[in-house]
Amino acid sequence: MRRSRLATILAGLLLAAIPPALAQPPVPAPAAAAALPTVAGLPSINLKVSGGNRTQNLFQRVYGPFFTTELAQRSNGAVTTTFGSIEELGIRGPEVLRLLRLGMFDISEGTLSYMAGDDPHFDALDLPGITLTIEAQQAAVNAYRPIVARQMAEKFGVKLLTMSPVALQVFYCKGRIEGLASLAGKKVRTFNRGMSDLVEAAGGSTVNLPFAEVIPAMQRGVADCAITGTSAGNTARWWEVTDHLYMLPMGWSMTFFGANLRAWERLDPRVRAFLEPEFAALEGRMWAQAKADVEDGINCNAGRQPCNDGIMATPPMTLVAVSEADKARAQALLRERVLREWARRCGSACVREWNATVGKLVGIEAPTP
Image (cartoon, rainbow, N blue to C red):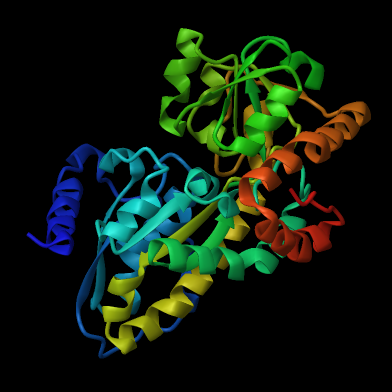
């Protein structure tokens, strides 16, 4: 059996295995999602799509409705999807690009830095502390986008469709924490090498866990703290197993949607012409949701209003502000440890490209190994 045929069968089995209880429709999309015009006369196509974590606002409020209802509505029923979340499909995360390359899915969502074990370029936009505002992060992403698109196409046969963040990444901790020094001796869940380098440089140890496994790990004492977005941890109810939210910026958890390049090129040109502006508009909506989620997640975790898209934590978490001394120390660790280790993993050519794009924007130069 040819590999493409096997991949199609396996993908069908994965998607068919989604339990009915988990296959409920996401939160209805906002009215603004209907801004693009309806297109008539397209040939019919059903796309196999894997999404991310179902509990997150980006899934529930933005791209879940996009794949389950909006594409079909705006294509007059021509473009439909068979769509499942990462939990429903039994995917851990780091294998997404490899599954796409095999043709298991036509389109997939992934966390960019999860893929850095296959290519360190994919860590370049999530080095903790490089950008401290979402506006700066968006500028960095736009500067580095051609490099990410090239690496995905050349190494994995994947067409990059979108890139957007989850939200600001911070520490959810069980037990009192007063600042960066409190991480010494603590076991911290991280999900990329840059985060691990900073935590270890601060005296902590790291545990690499998929998002869905964090709550049981915290309950068993496998981790004392865990890093995720201000909103992602809230909607996943991490406040049930943690009580302190330390606001040190640890990156943005960049995500992407990519398409199997062979499958994309086989699409009717009219379908590609329909999908490209759809994904461009989707990316804009995901950035807008991420921006709103930063403050909303903080409010919901702290048990204060306005808490619009999250869950009011009960009891509320204790917010731990970042002192000026911690800001300075974190920036020193970024330069002395995080950037140096990433540069060693990525190589001199990679570092030159980063310095000419992201580094130039933020005024930081990574050392050439």
